[in-house]
Length: 367
Image (cartoon, rainbow, N blue to C red; front, side):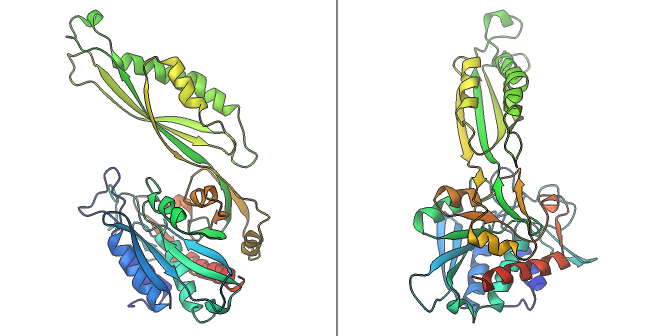
């Protein structure tokens, strides 16, 4: 490979666009194919047996299986995601990978090509020792984490594992619990008429306005009364609204998209039920990501903590919960900080990246 350092490897990864196509990606050819191929090539040079598994057309997971000297060992998965968020609105070259002032900049530098580069570099340095470790080691570069988590969902249907370490920018602390998400798309229906005689129609926007008041004044306080000892309270936010076709037509349709962040043990049917009770005939579709709540007493979590990391919770969600739902204990940890993720000048500090290599190396050596 052309990379002769972890910073060189990260530059190469950042310079490969792998933008998630959801929404407005800001590039003509979004998707993870090229990045997956590059990672597969790097893994092969590290001695891993590699495979690209297409999840949706042009968007594969990449899997690297490292050799082991004995069958039947417990299996550990190192699993960052390949995709990044949109590059729209960035104030730097999103794929430049420029290093200046001790920082490497570009989309994905923190989330999560930085953690991925640190994982891959630590695996490269330990490739001769991995076969004799007490655990079997796999690497999984997952597509689609930024919208839909299709890569993780596909992986856990295909493979078994005993522990998953998800690469995310946590400042090398151990996220063992995090909030989930319940995204709702709501639609109210009305009857269109000429706006000069609105009393003859039925205004779908007015119906949605009533529903917004219910969300703000009834549902949000109800959620605030619930609490998790680490994560705090669930939240709800109306994020996107669209309705009507023309100023002088009473609207017959209005759509609202709502973001709810959930906590372990929360009744996931409560909010849709309350919304339907508040608006007869409401159409409601949903996408859900589970919260995470892995037992911190797990021995591999204790191994991660030996280097001085802390156990923490997070208000965001990631692929760790997908693994946990499938019965695979999982946490998220890696170099970089969430404050630099998704920003218009995303970057990671070079010394933090180097600390990430040592963090992952110590974990792998202890397996």
